[in-house]
Length: 327
Image (tube, rainbow, N blue to C red; front, side):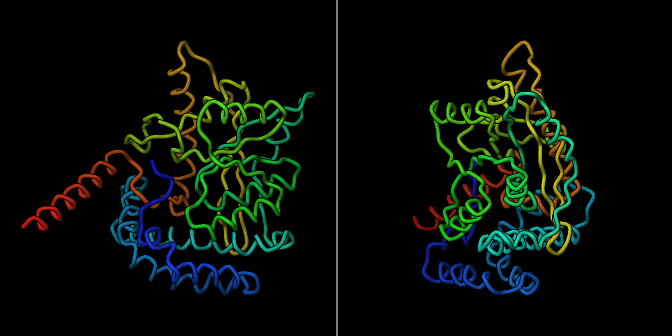
């Protein structure tokens, strides 16, 4: 699965016009109040959707998988909300990446602090694997953990839009969150293993395939593919996985949920161990996505059945274009 959804924005993001708009937003986020930027986004998002209808339809399809009983009008509104919430994520990211004092104007409610304390109550300090989703504002969770003395090493695939990526990097640098660009091969895995064994924290987003073949899992009643890398790392290092989710709860307000540490149980085979662990983890994913589907930022078909249908349409359109050209 490619980490970025195909869209008109991605297609033209490196044009002078779009880069100018993003750069202007970058400057404006330094002095405009958050409430004003959010109020503007309510209308700007509509224009963005009109130019990215395929992504809007994909979001509606995903929401239908999560909430099959929703009527069409409700799915349309939920898809609009997802685009709006994503704009809020970008606004907060840009706004907070100007200086480290701004985060103190936000309210952060943390549920499950005792689960963090448990990990650090042992005699010997140990690392752990932090697992989250593209939900709410995952960057804020890293900043909050860093301020509490837990420095995450975030494994990520750099955004192809360099202005957005530069703000993510600026945000992490300000809040002392280490970023680890995705690598491939044994040396990269050894690097992550060493971070953990030195008492560090390695963070992944568990809903996108990044250099990982993945495993098919039942997800809201249909098959979808999830990365196995974090589980394999937990197996090898014999360290726990901590599931953390951050959701928006209002204006400048976030809620961070920290689940109990999860230890991968070993079974008779490696494949069975991975599948059993992923099944438990995906069950927790379902719990949060079912509550906050509009904040799970997935702008392309996620389920295998829907991806196959989309690919068939693309192939059909491509063949139709070829036939037209021949005629």
